[in-house]
Image (tube, one colour):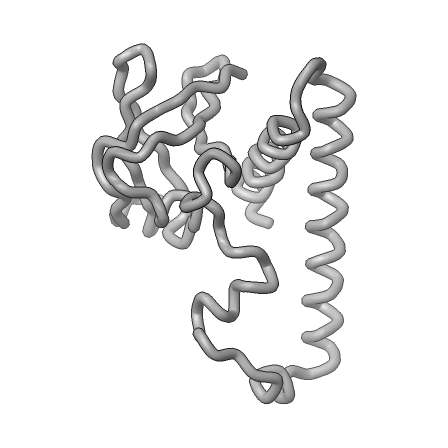
Length: 156
């Protein structure tokens, strides 16, 4: 896997495909080649991008390009944290929104969050065991990429 700098050439847009609603963003890689980055329709890392913006991408052995979360270099790329998701959808969340949630639903949400935290922790451990001589920021970015890839591949 290679990490490259790319420039957004066309703002992200939602498209309908045979796989359903997706978001696509066109980029120009540092070698001058052009590619597209695809994601689910609500993929925040893509939706916040703007034409002309520089981003960090990964390129796998098959040539597939994926966006890398790098909030230190590109603060505008950061997807809302889990706890902020409600405030993005509803700018003024309040406790009464959760009062109608059943205890079973609350347990399911808590279980899901725990599973996702465990998955991210596993991704961090895999990076520690397989990638050498990297900064903490790169470690986190690689683990985040693995985490997002696993979520997409297995529809988590």
